[in-house]
Length: 120
Image (tube, rainbow, N blue to C red):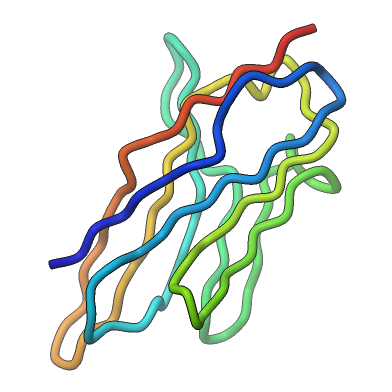
């Protein structure tokens, strides 16, 4: 059974940094695609960054380019989002999303979300 557990959110002052982690537990899979989304109060969920394994294509939303970095530790099946130069506008619940490849099929999973609050 696959589980995604997120951590690393919290309260930080503007200009600060946080690193979000998303541990994917289970067996018999490889991570084909990973992404981080966020949802601020009263707004739709939006894509922040993504990383496709084959090919190794990385995408960043314009509002985080140059500030956030998406990465993965294959040995630990953990997905990261390094967030630097945080702004109050980055305040949101951040969700990990992965597309896993099993032997005979693929499937998609969401993390439970982690709150990031940036104070001015």
